[in-house]
Length: 494
Ligand SMILES: Nc1ncnc2c1ncn2[C@@H]1O[C@H](COP(=O)(O)OP(=O)(O)OP(=O)(O)O)[C@@H](O)[C@H]1O
Ligand SMILES: [Mg+2]
Image (cartoon, rainbow, N blue to C red):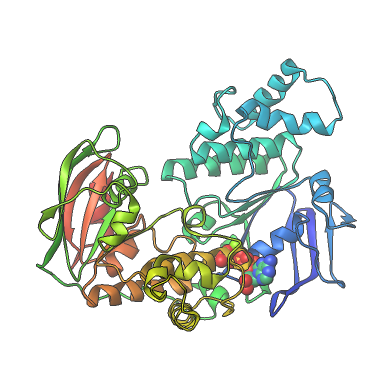
């Protein structure tokens, strides 16, 4: 019988108008990888914010950690007890080195005044060795890839003697190889007796590493299950209360070119990229993360440059210097990293949503027509089912997945001729993916040319008419999706 490390008992959390958690109880054992899963807005992040002392639970519940109840529910208490959360924007110090990031914490905690670089180097080296990670200790953290920064954050946690490590959607920006490395590190932590709470919307990844699963639905805990008790279908039905299958949309062959990309190259990123894009179609671009898909999309949108080649828009060569010009030409680009690049957290849902269309809802002197603004917001909030339906709520108060929806709608509202979406359902729960697919399909039906970049092959096969497969910066195949299966694509991607 495994020993409980964290006993969560009858925890509730209310926000104005929302019961984010209702009487939630579950237990995390010592040395296990515990998955926490639920739809967007189910209360997962709220739960871990309580664990880390960012929020206080309502009176009546308690959390017992290593046999002793938490008393203050403060960040300091959680840190002292060994609860460490790695958020998506893992608060590292970008301009400090790997060494400083890992070793400064324990150093400061011990109350030392003088910096003993040798001792710090030792702490950092042993920690990284333990995790079997090789990193240049003197590199500034800001210069590392997201995946490496994440490993530094985990090393920090370890150096700070974490007993419970919480990872909130850690894999969304990682390549397949990086995910596997992360899993390896997670397992080695587990073998050292550390408990991990792992939040993700990627079900195959959850099954790959988790020992037990706790399922949240609408702020309530549906129970904790052993990995062997579950399969995809059962897990999903616990989460959403029904069975989910991707709807496979009808495929079309369009012949109405709006954009042509010819021999686009950029040293070190992509080479000799040529394709056409038609009005009314969804063109999928897939391949492994790191294959150059995003770089190509950004080159079209003016966020990235290219060395040679050309792009024709409606028959005329064009080259965009700034994203503004792209928007004026009717091109919209929804980045993969939507939370960092796409949202003003302090502003309301409403303000965020209309930011891209201010011109069209303002009068000649630039005054925003508030009635139009409200109408537009209501329309998109309904279309993307953004919850809670409170347009004046600051975006910071939305769950991660609902923030994603706001960014998506902000670009959809520009009524573009060409829409490029990078990983459109990243961070969106399984229940809502089909809703997003339907919206993209409707846009294509309405004559918009849509490019969908996705690593998720079932998603490409469900919605795209045509697919381009990229491998190491080049196009390795282009195919119509009708009758295509996953293996056909995979064989070209790797
Ligand atoms: N600070 C806050 N103020 C008001 N409401 C909040 C606040 N934080 C969260 N909420 C609400 O609480 C509910 C649960 O949100 P939470 O972020 O915990 O969801 P989640 O399960 O992490 O979802 P996702 O998968 O989308 O990240 C949502 O309805 C959200 O809007
Ligand atoms: Mg969340």
